[in-house]
Each structure stands twice: as structure tokens, then as C-alpha cells.
Length: 336
Image (cartoon, rainbow, N blue to C red):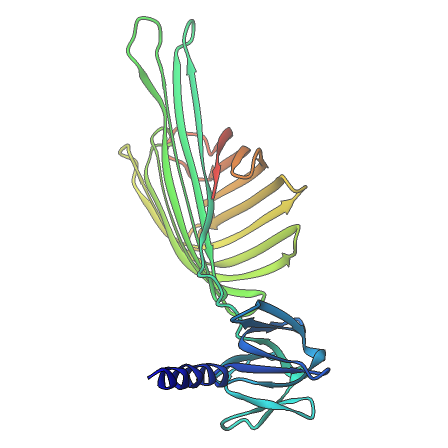
């Protein structure tokens, strides 16, 4: 019985040894284990005894894998093959690809790219005054972007509310605005992308019950580097505007032209500037646009402060109202 157990242990040990990948170095040493990754000319082998061992590819004489590994070439092609060895500076592979030049391989068993995640911020504005002037205001601003290799989804929203209390009277509403926007970009190549966008707005004191826009178009990335991003867009959009008063609603097909600039002033401060315009294709008098300029400062890793100027311009407003609204807002919030 003792002899049988000894033979069983020896057989199991031999099976474990044979089942491992083998890396033979130029000096004759052999490393057994599991090939984890290869990138930037370095192979990482997971040894059951020594843990992860890093070996330069230039120091490897031979390499054999007992199971298939993922191979990614410099041209972006991917294969899953078992490596039978190295010969003439090429990997000998099982299957329909007999050999692959080592110089053409960018990575082996590359880590999976993390799934796209949302990045954005949520900020608040507020004011309370009591005494000769009694006023209370509150506001919320949110934005989020999710980007993958093939597309980008952008969302933004805001809400403003304010009341005054004249002496001896009840609270009187003097500001109520709410809106949101959703945009989808599909990357056609490194510069060009197709887009679809929609936006809604309600503004009590601009007499807007609902302003709705929806359209499609094309975009072009003019600048995209570590400091500056500039996108320009053009397309067609449908605009529908209904009023809180008895003023007749308007609806028309419009062109949409827009651009958005983001510039990193330093590691904590950035400048954002954007314009979005909707000139009517049916009546040249109907033009609506919004212009925005903003300074954003990272107070901490997650806490931000923002100073923004926003102008809304409507060339044909509700009767008796001005064509433009200006807002300057200071807000504090959190990024994610």
C-alpha cells in the first residue's frame, strides 16, 4: 500500500510538471509555470513556487505553451493558438498559421479592456437672504459622458428655482427653469462621427412651456490632445416651441451648427466653451442659439467649483419679451 501511494504521488507530480508551459532561457535555464502576459518585450510567467517571473523576450531561447494563448499583432489582428516553440525568430503555432514573426506580436494574453464607465459631475447652487431683502434660490447642474471605442453617450440636465418675499407679502416666484439634453456619437474613424441629439427646456419667465429639439448630423474632431479638445458639428434638427401664454406655438425644420472647446489650463483648472445654434430653414427670422463659457477648478480629487456664463438667444421670443437671457452661475459639486 505504501508503494502504491508513492507511485500515485509521483505520477500526479509528473502530470503537473508536464502540463505546465515551459520557457527556456539563452543560458539554458528553464522556467515552468503558466505564461500570463507578454507586452513591451517582457514575458511574465506565473511559477507555482516563485510567483510571477518577468523575463525579457530577447533572453528567451524557446517557449512552449501547453494550451492556447491569445496573440495580438501590431496590426490589431488576434489569434488563439498553442505555441509549439521558437524557430528563426518566429513562434511555431498549431493550426492553420504555422509561424508568426516575434516582431509582429504586440501582446500575448492581453488583459481585457475595462467596460466603458460614466464620468461626469453633479453641482449645486444656492442662496438664502433674510432682512431687508428676503430671497431663496436653489439649483442643480449635472452632466455625464460614457465613451467606448466605437461610440460616446452624453447627458446633461439643470434645474433653477428662486423666490422673493416682499415685505408683508407672500413668497413670489421669480425663476423656474428646467432642461435636459441627450446626445449619441458613433465614431466613423479617428476624426469623423455621426450623431443624434435631442434637448428639452421649460422656462416660466421666458413664457416657454416646452422647447423641444431633435436631430441628426455629422461631427469632426478638429483638435484632440492632452490639453485641448475641439469638436465641430453640423446637421438638421426639428424645433418645436410651445408657450405658457396664448401665443401661437412655432415648429420648423432647422439647421444645427455647434462646436465645443475644452482646454486644460493647468492640472486643476479647465476652460469650457460651446455654442449650439438652430437657424430655421423655413423662415430666416427664426433663430435660436445658446452660448456657454465656463471655468472649472478641481478643489480636491472629487470636489469641483464652477463659474459659468450662459446666454440664450431667441430671435422670435414670445410677444413682449426680450430676445436674450444672460445667467452667471457659481456652483460647487462633485465629479465622478
